[in-house]
Length: 150
Image (cartoon, rainbow, N blue to C red):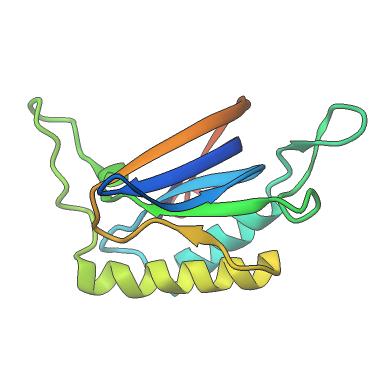
């Protein structure tokens, strides 16, 4: 499971020119699920995401997590995070999980993140053509991969 986490001042998802969801201060999380992922990968990523200390404290040091700042999460599925680009110029998505495997993990990820955050997470729509807008705060962008826990 691969996450691209962006600290944002605000972020939103539009689908077919309609606002689907939006957040203010918090984290925009793109989540890519691959065939080899399971609930252990999902739990690891949720825990790391919710405990990631990337918000500034009163001294300006990244010392606070999203819950400590009463922030929000916007979680957007993105299978292209598992693009293979080694050969040729057209990405291959063969490692990305099929919807029948990915959707249940995506839904569990959202439920577990909501529980840890103590409030509902905002989301995109799995498989939809979405337009995502954001104001990256910092900018701060972190990549987290459950298969690379170094």
